[in-house]
Length: 113
Image (tube, rainbow, N blue to C red; front, side):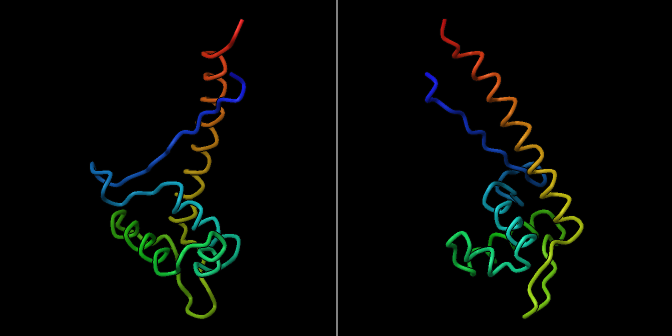
């Protein structure tokens, strides 16, 4: 069973409804791209996503959370807001810790004798 793997799905959300202000793997990848590349457009292109879709995903999350994730600077690109950076770092940390914990526990549960 060594070929089996486990992949958690982490979703942060505002209020009490997952449909409002969700933050998951997709937006985390987009925001990491903005942080690394300095542009939402470049980030979207990097993952083969239409800019309009990337913009919609970010805007919906911002509306749901009630704060901006990205500071737009026109043709000069974009940067993460302090809140966006904090949320992205928290998500990435939780994702890594969760993955490590689940990998260890999964290995214990399927251990063959």
